[in-house]
Image (tube, rainbow, N blue to C red; front, side):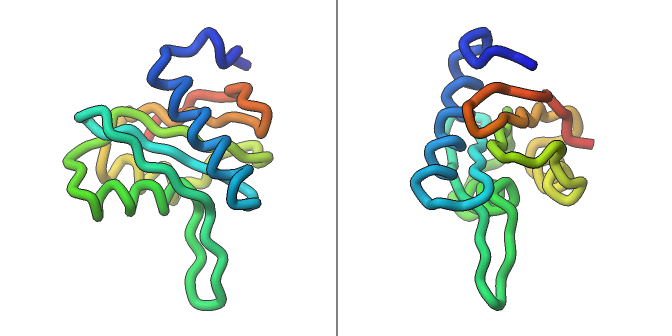
Length: 117
Protein backbone atom coordinates (compact mmCIF):
# COMPACT_ATOMS: atom_id res chain seq x y z
CA UNK A 1 0.00 0.00 0.00
CA UNK A 2 1.10 3.52 -0.72
CA UNK A 3 0.13 6.48 1.40
CA UNK A 4 -1.50 8.99 -0.94
CA UNK A 5 0.58 11.80 0.56
CA UNK A 6 3.73 9.98 -0.62
CA UNK A 7 2.59 10.12 -4.24
CA UNK A 8 3.83 12.57 -6.82
CA UNK A 9 1.47 15.60 -6.67
CA UNK A 10 0.17 14.95 -10.19
CA UNK A 11 -0.60 11.31 -9.35
CA UNK A 12 -2.24 12.38 -6.09
CA UNK A 13 -4.40 14.75 -8.16
CA UNK A 14 -5.76 12.01 -10.43
CA UNK A 15 -6.49 9.76 -7.43
CA UNK A 16 -8.39 12.63 -5.80
CA UNK A 17 -10.31 13.33 -9.02
CA UNK A 18 -11.22 9.65 -9.40
CA UNK A 19 -12.36 9.54 -5.79
CA UNK A 20 -14.51 12.61 -6.30
CA UNK A 21 -16.16 11.19 -9.43
CA UNK A 22 -17.04 8.00 -7.58
CA UNK A 23 -18.54 9.84 -4.62
CA UNK A 24 -20.28 12.58 -6.60
CA UNK A 25 -21.97 10.17 -9.02
CA UNK A 26 -22.66 7.39 -6.52
CA UNK A 27 -21.06 4.79 -8.77
CA UNK A 28 -18.97 1.73 -7.86
CA UNK A 29 -15.78 3.16 -9.37
CA UNK A 30 -14.27 6.43 -10.45
CA UNK A 31 -11.30 6.99 -12.72
CA UNK A 32 -9.08 9.76 -14.00
CA UNK A 33 -6.41 9.82 -16.68
CA UNK A 34 -3.73 12.42 -17.41
CA UNK A 35 -2.66 13.02 -20.99
CA UNK A 36 0.78 13.94 -22.29
CA UNK A 37 0.00 17.67 -21.97
CA UNK A 38 -1.13 17.39 -18.34
CA UNK A 39 -4.87 17.62 -19.03
CA UNK A 40 -7.05 15.33 -16.96
CA UNK A 41 -10.23 13.45 -17.85
CA UNK A 42 -12.50 12.13 -15.11
CA UNK A 43 -15.33 9.61 -15.28
CA UNK A 44 -17.48 7.22 -13.31
CA UNK A 45 -18.68 3.83 -14.43
CA UNK A 46 -21.59 3.83 -16.90
CA UNK A 47 -24.49 1.43 -16.34
CA UNK A 48 -27.28 1.80 -18.88
CA UNK A 49 -29.51 -0.89 -20.32
CA UNK A 50 -27.71 -0.59 -23.67
CA UNK A 51 -24.23 0.49 -22.53
CA UNK A 52 -21.86 -0.67 -19.82
CA UNK A 53 -18.44 0.90 -19.44
CA UNK A 54 -15.96 0.85 -16.61
CA UNK A 55 -14.88 4.19 -15.22
CA UNK A 56 -11.38 3.74 -16.65
CA UNK A 57 -12.57 2.92 -20.17
CA UNK A 58 -14.94 5.90 -20.00
CA UNK A 59 -12.10 8.22 -18.95
CA UNK A 60 -9.90 6.91 -21.77
CA UNK A 61 -12.76 7.41 -24.24
CA UNK A 62 -13.22 10.98 -23.01
CA UNK A 63 -9.51 11.66 -23.52
CA UNK A 64 -9.62 10.27 -27.06
CA UNK A 65 -12.80 12.21 -27.87
CA UNK A 66 -11.07 15.38 -26.64
CA UNK A 67 -8.06 14.87 -28.89
CA UNK A 68 -5.50 13.45 -26.45
CA UNK A 69 -2.56 11.92 -28.28
CA UNK A 70 -1.17 9.89 -25.37
CA UNK A 71 -1.56 9.18 -21.65
CA UNK A 72 0.97 9.64 -18.87
CA UNK A 73 -0.95 7.92 -16.06
CA UNK A 74 -4.33 6.66 -14.88
CA UNK A 75 -6.04 6.09 -11.54
CA UNK A 76 -9.02 3.95 -10.54
CA UNK A 77 -10.81 4.18 -7.20
CA UNK A 78 -12.79 1.07 -6.45
CA UNK A 79 -13.49 -1.67 -3.93
CA UNK A 80 -12.25 -4.17 -6.53
CA UNK A 81 -9.02 -6.00 -5.86
CA UNK A 82 -7.72 -5.63 -9.41
CA UNK A 83 -8.18 -3.75 -12.68
CA UNK A 84 -9.70 -5.82 -15.51
CA UNK A 85 -7.44 -6.68 -18.43
CA UNK A 86 -9.79 -4.82 -20.80
CA UNK A 87 -9.29 -1.61 -18.81
CA UNK A 88 -5.51 -1.96 -18.84
CA UNK A 89 -5.68 -2.63 -22.59
CA UNK A 90 -7.62 0.62 -23.14
CA UNK A 91 -4.90 2.53 -21.27
CA UNK A 92 -2.23 0.80 -23.37
CA UNK A 93 -4.07 1.66 -26.59
CA UNK A 94 -3.64 5.37 -25.88
CA UNK A 95 -0.71 5.51 -23.46
CA UNK A 96 1.39 2.62 -24.63
CA UNK A 97 2.80 -0.32 -22.76
CA UNK A 98 4.08 0.54 -19.31
CA UNK A 99 1.67 3.41 -18.62
CA UNK A 100 1.11 3.37 -14.83
CA UNK A 101 -2.38 2.66 -13.49
CA UNK A 102 -2.92 3.43 -9.81
CA UNK A 103 -5.54 1.30 -8.06
CA UNK A 104 -6.86 3.02 -4.94
CA UNK A 105 -9.42 2.13 -2.33
CA UNK A 106 -12.36 4.47 -1.71
CA UNK A 107 -10.41 6.28 1.02
CA UNK A 108 -7.71 7.19 -1.53
CA UNK A 109 -5.06 4.75 -0.36
CA UNK A 110 -3.20 3.41 -3.37
CA UNK A 111 -3.21 -0.38 -3.09
CA UNK A 112 -1.30 -1.17 -6.27
CA UNK A 113 0.48 0.43 -9.18
CA UNK A 114 -0.09 -1.63 -12.30
CA UNK A 115 1.22 -1.07 -15.79
CA UNK A 116 -0.61 -1.24 -19.07
CA UNK A 117 0.45 -4.32 -21.06
